[in-house]
Each structure stands twice: as structure tokens, then as C-alpha cells.
Image (cartoon, rainbow, N blue to C red):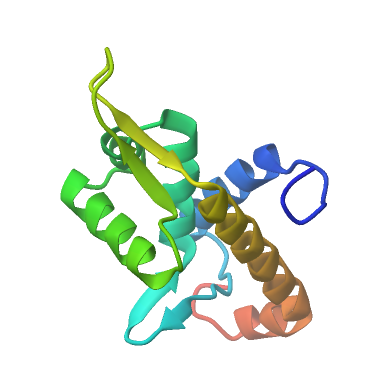
Length: 140
């Protein structure tokens, strides 16, 4: 069970992340939600992908590489998320044989699960309208 009491959805979350990446590369149109806090995007599809990659790799730099982004960009996204929530969503670890790493905190896991649930609900709620909208687009 996840933090919302739902069955574990890790595989579905990774598949959803891959589907979002494919949609951004020219696949079918897909609605995307972004959660704004003050003037910053607290959570959006790229940050969700980054959190999933950090969970998978245990490292901000490895997560950045897996997503094809620079370490600096990944670090800035993590920093923005950490500033937007009550406590950090990602913690960096120092020392150890492998020189540290990073982990998604319990709050970060909750934030990610809730964001993915909201994103799925939003997409489901506009599915019919989006199909009609898509027919109006060039090349369709």
C-alpha cells in the first residue's frame, strides 16, 4: 500500500513517466497539471519524473543523466521543490563508500503519489473533450 492507502503503483508510476516523456516528444496531446506556489512551480510532470528517477537511482546526478538533463538543472528543480514544501522532499546524503547520494523523503513520496493521482484524475476528467480537441489539431 502507498501513503494514500492505494495498492503499490511504482510500476504504473514509472510507465506514466515514460508516457509523459513520449507525449512531450510528439505523441498524442495530453493535459498536464502544474502546482504553483507563490511564483514557483512546486510540482509538475518534470519534477515528478525527477523524483521517480531519484527514487530509482539514489542519486541526483544519476537521475539527471537518466532523464537527459544537467546536474545543475536537476539540483535547481530539487531545490525549488524543497523550498515549496514544509520539509524537504529530497535529502542529500554525505559520506559512505559511494560518496553519498540522495533519497526521496516520506513527504516527497507522499507529494509524488498525490501529484500522480491528481494528474491521472485530471486526464480522465477531460478525456472526451481532449479527443475532440485533438481532432482540431494540425496533422490529425
